[in-house]
Amino acid sequence: VALGLAVHQSMPGWYARMWYPLTYEDAINRDARRNGLDPALVAAVVWRESDYDPAARSSRGAEGLMQVLPSTARYIETQPDPPPGNARDIRDPEVNVSFGSWYLRYLIDRHGGSVPQALAAYNGGPGNLRTWKAEAIAKGTEFRIPDDIPFEETRNYVTDVMDAWTVYREAYGDRLGPAGAA
Image 1 (tube, rainbow, N blue to C red):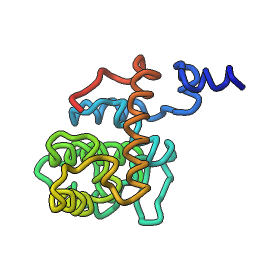
Image 2 (image 1 turned 45 degrees about the horizontal axis):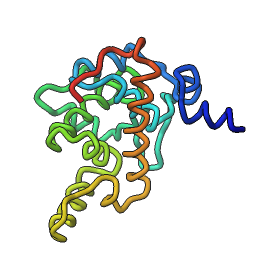
Image 3 (image 1 turned 60 degrees about the vertical axis):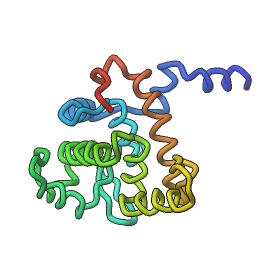
Image 4 (image 1 turned 180 degrees about the horizontal axis):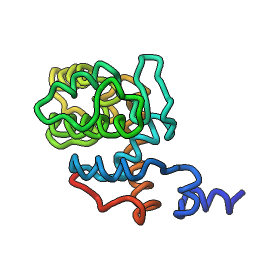
């Protein structure tokens, strides 16, 4: 038991790869690079959103590897520099990673470069993030992540992705391209 705990806590690469899979690495590397993201961050989002299941579908209708809502895909498609692909093909893993990576970059840019805030918006919704930030300001405090996120799922999501980002970078540095801007 003690040896197992020590291995789990030290998380050597071979062990991390058992718990944190990586597939679709060509799409992840390509779209991370296209959007100035660390491929390990995109891999962590895919892991947390769908556990690499391209057929994943949430109860709210989000689809695919990065769990993109069809309405979000249609919005992305109308932007001045949309990613390759078509919103109607959002179930296709290549299109899904393309649109999900574009949207993650969009949220990071919208939130002053803050990856944790972008992740909170990605999971909990941009409108909810605005509300949470406004509530903190109204109390005269700084918005703290994950503490000031009232949704347990979103608090856990941000923490999980941030932790997995590090694991993916360390476990798959040889397969994921160099770290991007965010």
